[in-house]
Amino acid sequence: MSAVRSKICGITRIEDALSAVEAGADAIGLVFYAKSPRAVTVLQARAIIAALPPFVTTVGLFVDASRCELGEILDAVPLDLLQFHGDETPVDCEGYHRPYIKALRVKPGDDIAAQVALYKNASGVLLDAYVPGIPGGTGEAFDWSLVPQGLKMPIILAGGLSAENVAQAIVQVRPYAVDVSGGVEIAKGIKDGGKIRAFMQAVKAA
Image 1 (tube, one colour):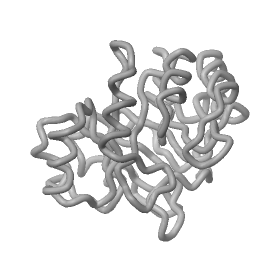
Image 2: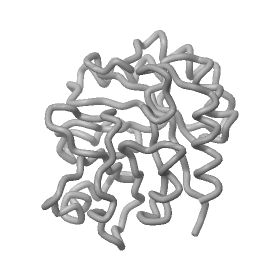
Image 3: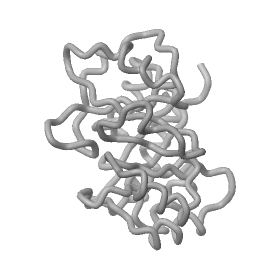
Image 4: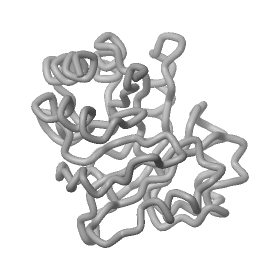
């Protein structure tokens, strides 16, 4: 099994982005969703990205953004990858000249394989916990046994991950990557360097 990639999401400060990179994270996530406590402005995002060293993937998270809004952000912020976390259809996710991943909120009874198959042009699919009315960043895990084996798409596992449970999650799900936000925070949007390092050490040891 190849090394599991990692993304630290909900970055709002330069120092947190650098902590993530120093700990070995492959990507950082910037939230462009005004209702999120981890939302960043265009100016914040530009400053964070400008401070990053090479070979770190910058991911912009959007929730049912209009094409106009998303286009304006992409004109201003050099994002590498788009993450759609709302009710976007495959057509909604395409046409931005950027690779994208689609987040799916998992609950019992879902046909995950069928949902994944809809987004055949995605670079990957992120599986997160389903909490009514909250598109993501809930800090809650879902039942990992609901993830079917053999999905023909890179799977990014999210939802309630922390240094304490990420190794178990990797062993059980065997994802392409893991995504953490609340599990490495001291407050919403404020990361803890020690928690980031512990999380990354657990990922690498899994």
